[in-house]
Structures are given as structure tokens and as C-alpha cells.
Length: 144
Image 1 (tube, rainbow, N blue to C red):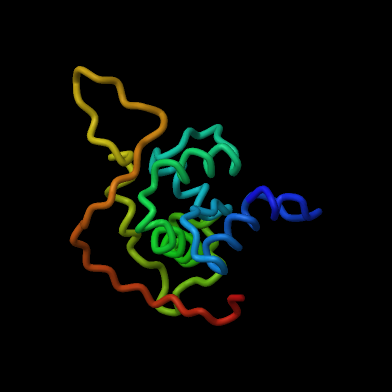
Image 2: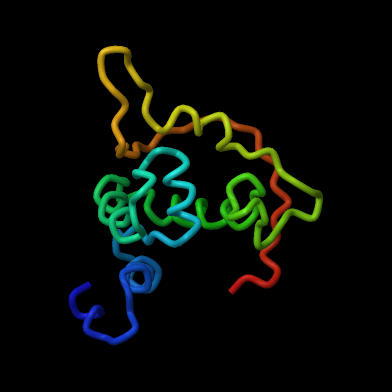
């Protein structure tokens, strides 16, 4: 990280992407899609920046799911009307709007609140399997 940050024009997201995708390091890049969805899920605070969200999520997301979770959140943020900026996805499904699989989880905020304990602003992300039936007609046309 330190070595890459010496190059002018390389910010934390680019460095994190190089480390994750090119070098196979355990990094969790936070782009606009990851940040928007992480805020709406309650994983980071609503006032967090990409940099503060990166610091938090990179520390709490388990290493073995960092790449998969990052790719899923980016893809979902590009295809889902509900999770896209202004409700306008970059790559809307050809079949119309999808039913957002995250919608029922958003109120949950990633943490089951208890009556004795106030809900925390930042949530630790844990690996778990949630059975869902999802039909997404997203394509990768035009993506880089």
C-alpha cells in the first residue's frame, strides 16, 4: 500500500483494487456502489466517507469473502433500481426492474437489535448464508 501510494493520482480505492485483483491481497475496495449499499445496510455510518468506510469495512469483512462481496455489491449497485443512485442503474435488467434481494434486510441493518442494547452505528459484517431466490437479468454489456 505504502509503495503504491507514492504514485501521483493513485487514491485508496485504486490502490485497494490493484492489491485485490492484481496481487490477490485481502483488500476491500470501497467505490460509490459499495459505499451507498453499505450505508443503506447500516454497515457504516451515513456520514462516513469512502476512506472511513474503507478503513472500517476492510477491518471487519472476513478476508475469505472480500473479493466476492465487493464484486457482488458493485454488480448489484449497477443493476438494481432500488440500490442505484437516483434509482437509475447503469445497466438496468432488460426484463425491467428486479426485486431487490437486499430490501428485506435493509431494516435489519446487518445486526439484530436487542432491547437492552442500542443499535450500533457501525456493524461487523459476518459470513452467513441466506437462502434467497433471485432472478437477475443483468448483462455486462458496456462494462469495463
